[in-house]
Amino acid sequence: MMRRWWLRDIVFLAVVIAVIVGAWWAIAYATVYMPSMQYYNRILVLIGINITLAVSLNIINGHAGQFSLGHAGFMAVGAYSSAYLTFYYFAPYVAKFPENSSQAQLLQNVLLIVAILAGGAFAALAGYVVGLPSLRLRGDYLAIVTLGFGEIIRVLILNIEPIGAARGFSGIPPWSNFFWVFFFCVGTVIISRRMVNSSVGRAFLAVREDEIAAESMGVDTTRYKVKAFVIGSALAGMAGGLFAHYTPAYLNPTMFTFIKSFEVVVMIVLGGLGSITGSIIGAIVITILPEALRSVKEIMPGGRDPRMVIYSILLIVLMLTRPQGLLGRRELWSFLPKRKDRIPTESRDDGDSNDKLNRDAAPPVT
Amino acid sequence: MASDALLQAQSVTIRFGGLTAVSDFNLTIQPHELLGLIGPNGAGKTTIFNMLTGVYKPTEGEITIGGTSTRAMKPYQITSLGVARTFQNIRLFKDLTVLENVKIGGHIHYKYSGTSAVLHTNRFHEAEEEAEVEALKLLDIFELRGRADYLAKNLPYGDQRRLEIARALAARPKLLLLDEPAAGLNTGETLRLMEKIHEIRDRFKVAVLLIEHNMELVMGICERIVVLNFGKTIAEGTPEAIRANTKVIEAYLGEPAGAETA
Picture 1 (cartoon, rainbow over the protein chains, first blue to last red):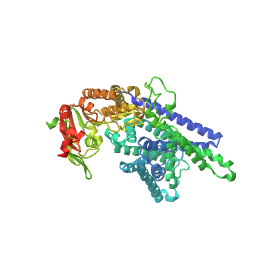
Picture 2: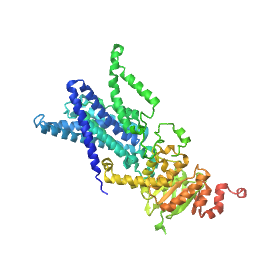
Picture 3: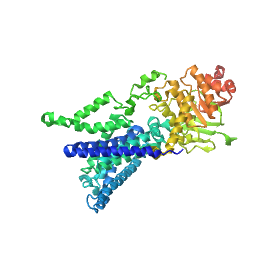
């Protein structure tokens, strides 16, 4: 039976685009009357980029269970390679057209997509290279290798003169905007969600849960581990490309230290490893928190900045009270009241409660 | 004779350092056969399972499945040859639901590219529907359907054992390897399990090789039994023959007092 499988998706995509464009225009309109919107707009874009990063890392860490600490490295590969393309090849080409003409506008957007996809492809290649050692290493050892990889990338960039080396890469065309950031952000979420609900995603989960059992069920564990790395790093590379082209369109190797990698890890751990909505919430919280705490500085004596202290305390409190993250492994909608027509889900456990207790008590018969 | 055999192990030996865990082991499994593998603890039964499924590589000897040598194969490739197993210490995907566990069991049959997963193509819908239907069918057989949405770790022990068998059957094997399926079950559960094993053998047309310490179960359902001690086959035959075999009795109960002093 042939179904027009693409019809619903196209309608869905149109709605998504309409919503993003609507939000984008609303913000642009509000900025005219309220110049401070510029600041909120920037925070929103950063949230979009961070959601893309968190959701992509969640594929590697949360779904496939491979602990990676090199996400800033993948992001840097995507950011620098796409910026290199636009700065040296695309921007001079667009400059041939009269400024702000419709041709230049169109070309600029098309070339931005090309550059970002190319950045994603380079990052995917890097992910493949890092994925290969993960065939042999597990847990902490893999984390160390990926951490080292991130640093290698940073040191490499620090020494490549055409992309600015330690001075940083300035003069990148600022082509990225609210629309593209959220377009890729929504795309990443959809890819991740559909992936995890497919045979590919189930294979990722099987690898996370028990490699030996997965292998004996016919899952080629090495192949799926590398796959997770490639998909996750490609998406992170695209986030990097969007970041590179967003005003002020400046890149510096210090933006991609392991601290950035940790930040992304904190986002997904905070939201709940393995939960896509959790990663999104984590990304939003971690992006907003330092900004929201900015005002605390004003009431501190001597204008000291206590942001990092409060930020750390909040994280410690959260980890003590909810070590599995805000959502655990569940998605946000699993907290909503359940429909009655499905298989009874009342007793579906979220993996939060004490394992030992659950094993002793037989679940109620449904 | 060898050509129509499902699985053939020829003088298989495995050594871990200086320890010979299994030596010169021979086994032929015919399609649709119910075979028991018994022996005292440490006899090498699970090691044999691990060799048959490719987790360990035999030091010497050859294992062929349906005429194909498994020497250079990884465990997941052997699964596609039609061998599925359960584990002695249950290895379910604990944090996934019962239904997901069974669907992963059928992984080799419902594969499609990541692209069709993301685009939700027809191929995706067909494969997913089939996976769902097949998985629910298996859950029905094992009386687990009502708990399809439970996390595997929250199932009672007996259900976990049955779920593991259901998951293995989802791979549509020709040979099912059961590693102590009755371990930890009470008498009633064991009896039901015996019936179940018989039923699935007939229903799915599989050959079953099972390791078991519960003699009632082994003697009750197996058509042929292989007895292992210290890595060597000491007896092979029908349950009646095994029951009467002096070597087997010695292996389990020790040598007669007279033999020791002599």
